[in-house]
Image (cartoon, rainbow over all chains, first blue to last red; front, side, top):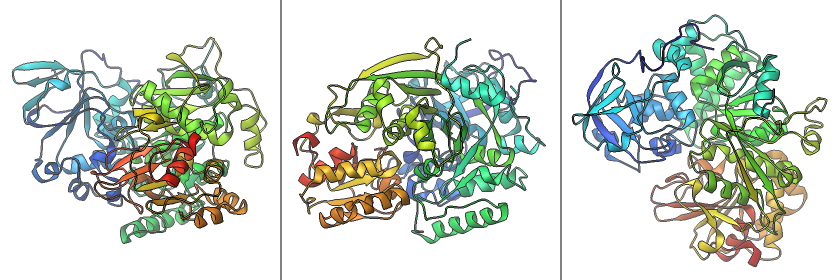
Length: 185
Length: 416
């Protein structure tokens, strides 16, 4: 297991590695936002994040790619990133300058892909209360999102993924490993 | 100590008791990459400092999403992967064999008790053999290619017990669409779904593949059917293995148990734009359609096409709509050809294409225009999945697709 030796009390430390992210403009989305919506299949021959970003949400929310700015945040509902395993989805968002995605819940592969590539997925059960266009701050120390004077708690990242987040993604984490002893827990 | 089949697979691989919730760096028996997610995975492998893959014999490589290359970019991705295969001594099935999941199973590259990953969400289909198989992203795949292991949080299991006899023209696809509607699009997130019960025990391998294929549509990490006589019969000639016992203990700790009776199940149709929207066909009968797609890893096997032929009988497909039939693999294509069905389909007005993903992912050919409606035997009906985001995709069984292709509107296959 990856971060077993560096045991972290989950309740105290929510997302250690992420810097404070303040005043992020919200792009609000609903439930079950699938990876086909984030980046349609016809663009998957592209592997470059900046190029992918030009087609993010094409056909479902065309103004996104045109108006998104560095440091904006995506806020979704339930099951964000469901469907295809395409890593082009988190890459397209990163290419657009998005560093954080907040949602009530995430689909498994998207969640894991995001952490692996260095996009921070944040589970916030009350994400529905955050409005489109609002400015929010991710307050890591207090484990919450601050929006319009209110605080919405966020869930801790699974401890075993902390090591990958700390390293800045799985590529950097893997570089530090010479071999991986199978069946370690 | 009792255990689920998934817990047993991880425990067997590691030689110690492992239970759901534990995180383990598990050794991999196989890793599959295709033309869409492969190039990124290879890129990540190199970025991680990868020089030699962990074991070329355990890597399954093929192209199926954009074949034959439909753009210069796709052709370039193919070239990049071919180069990697040659450099690493990996056998590449290239564009010749068909849809990745079907080919992986046909070639015996996933087997009971194994742990297999694929850089594609429908990798969960290999669970039909009693393997633990899950879809991963490209960076995870880069890691898997380099180290031959990957960290897993061992999932809890939802046990779906199925009883009853399928009515005529109702089958595995109708069952899994009704299960998806019951469990919901995220009802199995982080969990495995084990399909069991008398109906599953009688179900053939193609039917089991259809069930396991769509576990991901409920957020599932894996779908799995415990191996039995039918499984071991399928493995014959594909893998040299001595059959062994592998099943969940009856009193194992399950996340939940759900039971389904198919005796009165109607043909199901998932309406746009989510997969968990399955309704009995009576609710959507008569819906206008522009294109019917019969194929994909979900329902492009010989048995599916044989049922299409049965429903078709001596009739013709409606000339006002396009009917695309794409066998899931070269083997399935040949079986269909030898049975005389390809000729029958072509004469009835269908366009039969060579094995590939076809319109399923909306990245290649067979796309729909704004306002158009596709009826499809594939696995996803998300907005824009098969072309325009102003189009609609309905999902159904091969029998329903065939009946509808004859009339030109969504039609109950029991009435044709």
